[in-house]
Image (cartoon, rainbow, N blue to C red):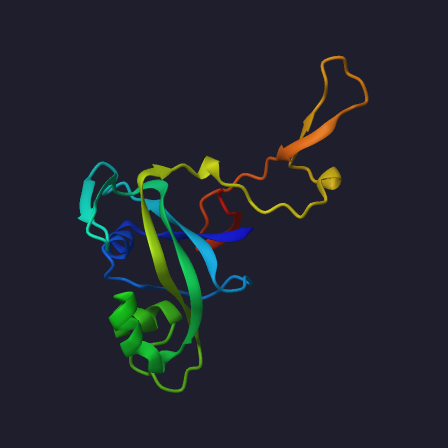
Amino acid sequence: MEAALISIQPKWCELIASGKKTVEVRKTRPKLNSPFKCYIYETKDKQFEHIGVVGYRTDGTRYDFLHGTGKVIGEFVCKKIEELYQCNSGWVQAYACLSRDKFFDYLGIPRKTHLGYDKKAYGWLITDLVIYDKPKELSEFRRPCDGNCHKCKDAIWHTPRDFSSDSKIVGCGRKVTAPQSWCYVEALE
């Protein structure tokens, strides 16, 4: 099953983990049917890299993790994606913890002339949030495979020790790197 891996800065991850931020705003959206699984990649941040964060999940349990280490800290189910325009700025402020000015800056709309622009963003609704006790490494994730492995440069082949012609594909080596915004990944079991 395909899923998405979304890059989020440490300060926003903390708000998501605490349950205060229930919408993530992006300029694009995946072509996945809702609901779909989304993994949260906390971006690296040298300023916070060695600062431990202690917080409480929405269910009241405690979580601890180092801030800004470049790991996957949790997952959520995106049950719906809303189209957002400048008229939704109050909704964005309430659920995405993003001020009106920051929302317009993100969309590239000049602050003095907020009217007359039809740029849109997408609000990814965060539900069924799980913050991992131990963050996952990016190396645990793989990009989706199209199934045409014989032509794929990322296919991992196994050749028997006797070098017979019984070579076979044993997996796909399509590793995931930190996405600029988000990317497709294979859902973990």
